[in-house]
Length: 76
Image 1 (cartoon, rainbow, N blue to C red):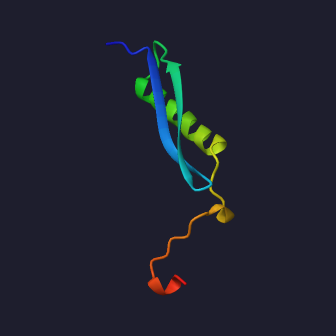
Image 2 (tube, rainbow, N blue to C red; image 1 turned 180 degrees about the vertical axis):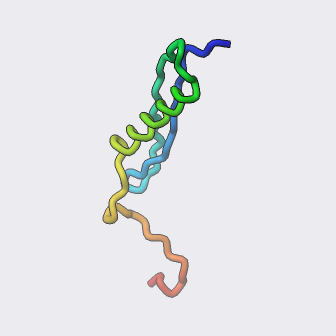
């Protein structure tokens, strides 16, 4: 079998104002005749991870909308 095209994707949940929103980023690419398929997949994975870090909102310290308490004495 000759692999000519690869696709790598990742779906993550991002927290926007306490609501979980699922977002998917994927990348497709052609594998060259003399290119290693495993290397092409790793390159696609790196691109997806970079895009996730760059384009998805990252939670900030002040962005927490829910505080979970585990001690009944804290509830007042």
